[in-house]
Image 1 (cartoon, rainbow, N blue to C red):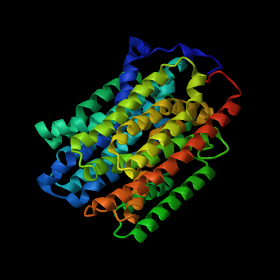
Image 2 (cartoon, helix red, strand yellow; image 1 turned 180 degrees about the horizontal axis):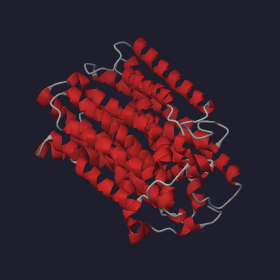
Image 3 (cartoon, rainbow, N blue to C red; image 1 turned 90 degrees about the vertical axis):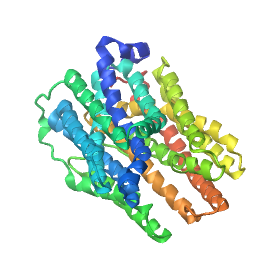
Image 4 (cartoon, one colour; image 1 turned 135 degrees about the vertical axis):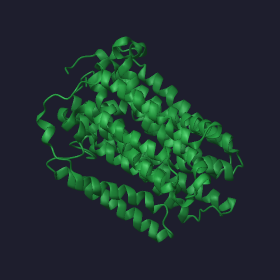
Length: 478
C-alpha cells in the first residue's frame, strides 16, 4: 500500500505461475461468463424463435439481461461488504445457473426472458466482484497485466462469442449455446472456493442495500432500452429524455445518501475519478454506433455477406487485444497513464474514418478505421481501470472497481438508444431505401464522433487531475 514501484517488474508469465494461475483463470472466467453471454444470445435466439415463436419479444432478451446486469453490478460492492466475496460470488453463480437452466429448457419466449433476468443479475454481480478482487488477489506489479487480460477477454468475446454460439447452434442446438454456461459456472464456483477466502467479521455487514435507488436506476436503464421501440420519434425523444433525467436524479440523490452506491467523487468534473468515469461511460457510448449499425450498413449499403460484414468486428477485437497486450507489457506505469488520453483520441479518429467512409461511399476505409477503434480501447482501457482505483479513496475502491463493467454496459445501452433515435429521425427502418439508410448511418456516426470528442477532453483532464492528486508519485499500489 505504500509508494513503491513494483509494477515495473511484472511479467505476463507470472500470471501463469502456480501462485497466480488459478486466480487469473478464475477472474478471467468470471468476466468471460458476462462478456460472452451478451454475444451468445444475439446469435442463438433467432433459431429459438423459429422453434416456438415470440419474435416480437426478441429484443427483450438482450434488454432485460442488460438491465439486470447493471443492477447486479450496482449492488455488488454492497453485497461483497456484507457477505464477503466468496459468498457473494457463489450465490451469484447459483442465480446465474438457475437462469441458464430456465432459458435452456424454455418452451416459450416468456420463459427465456425469465431466465435472462436471473442470468443478467447473477452475472452483473460476478463481473463486478471479479474486478474488485483484482487488487486483493494480485500484487501491484501484476495489476496492469491482469487488467490487460480482462480487456482481452472483452475483446475476444466480441469476436468469439458469435462464432462459438453460431457453431453450437448450427451443429447441435440453440439450447447448447445457453447450456454451455452451466459447466463453465460450475468450474468457476470450484475455483472461487479454492482461492477466495471466507468472510471475516466486518463492521460493514450491517450496511443496508439501497433498494429504492436501485429500482430507480433500473427503471431509467429500462426506459432507455424501451425508447428504441417507441412507435414515433416524439415518443422516443420523450422516453429517452425522461430516462436520462431519472438517471441524473438518481446520481444526485446517491451523492447525498449516507450509504451510497457510487464512490465519492463519481462523475464530478473536478476530480480525476469523476472525469475518468465519464471516459469509461462515453467511449462505449460512442462505439455503440458501430456495434449497432456498422454490420447492418455493410450488408445493406455495400451488399456484404454476413460473414464478410462480421470481419469488421473481428478486426476491431483483434486490434483491441493486441494493443492491450502491448500496453500492459510496458514497464513504465507513468507512460501507461500518459497514454490514457490516446484511447479516446484514437476512438475519435476511427469513428471519423467510419464517418468519412460512409460520406464518400468508400467501404475500404471501414477496415482500417475499425483497427484504429480497437486500438483506442486497447491502449487505454486496462490502464484507465487501474487508474480509477488509484485515485479512489481507500474505502471506496470496491465501489469503483465494481462500477467499471456496470458503467461499460450502461454506456452501450445509452449509446444504442441515442443511435436509434438519431437513425429514426433520418427515416431509418427495415423498409427504407439504400439512400435513406446511407443518410441515417452518416448522421449516427457524426453524433458518435461528437461524443467521442467529448471523451478526449475528459481523458486529458483525468490524467492532469490524477497527476496533481498523486503528487508526482511514480506509481500507486492498489
